[in-house]
Amino acid sequence: MILAVISTSATLYLLFFILLAPFAYFYRVVLYSSAALFIFTNLALIVDFFIFRIWKFHINAMVLNIIFSPESMDSIQTGIAPVLAVVFIIAFFILFEYFTIKKIQNAPYEKKRARNSKVNRLLLPTLFLIILVDKVAYGFANMYAKREYLEPTKVIPLYQPMDFTRTMERQFGLKGVKVAKESLAIKGNKSINYPLEAITITNPNAKNIFIFTLDSVRASILSKEVTPYIDEFSKDAINFKNHISGGNATRFGIFSLLYGLNSSYWFAFLNAQKGSILFNTLDKLHYQTHIFASASTAWPEFRKTVFYDIQDRISDKHEGKPYEKDIQTTDEFLQWIDEVNTSKPIFSFVFLDAPHGQSYPKDNRKFLPDHYGEVNYLTMTSKDRIPLLNKYKNSINFSDKLVKKMIEKLKEKGLYENSIIIITADHGQEFYEYGRYGHNSAFNYEQVKVPFIVHLPQEDRYKEVTELTSNIDLVPTLMSYIGVSNKTDSYSNGDNLFSPKYKRDQAYIGNWNDNAILTDKYIYVFSNMPDKIFDNKIYDTKTYKEVHPKDSQKQKVILKALHENSKFIK
Image (tube, rainbow, N blue to C red):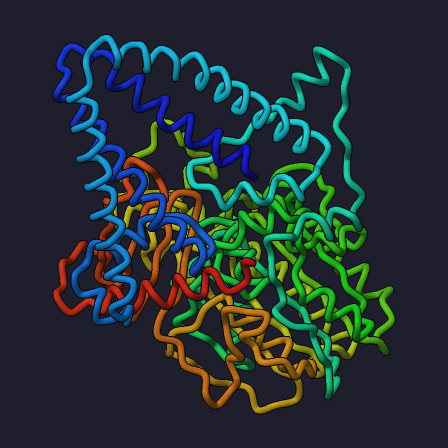
């Protein structure tokens, strides 16, 4: 840890030296520029240190919004002590630099040169040696999965890791270790504090659970015309009409759905290879669990995250076009239902891929024109919107038929009335409504609002819910339903949808480069990219037009998200 801190600091100041060295002729300019850099850099590092202590991550776009917004003081009750501490630190740095510059300027030139030469001879080789040792040590620790050495470096801002595993293997024949599943689960989760307490089941209520997830299906596409069976199914279920995915891409949508956590945790959980507490709980209740996925669960990395503990209960090996893989997946599910012991509780997650690839058989061309199911994605423009949308509708219409087969099988086996059955999607799809095509590019309703239809066992079920709900509410809802007595906030960012106290005023959404917080009025978007860290925007939720409201409640919204995004990190 000490080596890593010194190495990172030395590298940072070496960078400053390289930037300023060409201007050495302008002696006074370089001297004062160095002083300003010293003050700014060290102040930023100190602020970052305290931010990491509070929220477990380094300065990002949301944090900068808090720091540089005057109205944030209304939301953060800091008290006088932190303010005085910051003033004292700034004053100390300024005075330190002032007296240092005075001392340098007053010293004779030859004395300065001799002293500088002596310091360089002693200090530079030492620093280069420390940097070398740090990087090599990290590289070998990474190569042999010594996470007790890797994890602490996350505390250090701007730390640059070293990975030479492939080079060592190719050039020197040294092979890294593949850590066993059990040991990796222990060592890999050192920075994860999830759940906050052991799960307790006091009133077991092990109902069957079936989740049918359609890739890339936005809520607005469901209708009697496009999805006749799902439309009919919704009449015997609770239809959440304002449901928001945790991401506008598959990784983040599924992560939020099956962990009950904000999608910002994806990277930490992937690094730790920590599975969802949902499946551990189902195992305690002796559920027969199986995952049916048309596409590989190795990419996105669901075998290293949500399904980590149940990898032997996944069927995802298929061939052909997406719709052909969906047919194979459906057949596997139907066969499993025929063979499974229906006297024991069942959990199944089915993930169909045809809408994502807009794939369907030739005899399923219901919506025309569709370019005969073929589109050149390299040359397409907004002029192709109608055939693209028809292609999308055809694929979803085909998925509707497969969902019908599976749910009708549940009825045939006598499972329908005694099961929780959910139809949903990982994210939506845009068709140039706002100038974009696809997903993972914006946080408008087309990309993030998804169907969420829940059939409950043996109840008068039909109901439409228009209040804001989120993917992260599924796990606490299921856990509460099957008898978990823990408070939902001990293992989730969400809450039980059927709790009388349920109320959601914002939904967190994420992807690779950006994060967003959606409320009824506004969508706040923050970039993770270094070159866009100040480029934060606010959009009207319904129109997705950029706005500049004075009463946005931005700081309150951000603070709540920051708290939730740090809760399960040590």
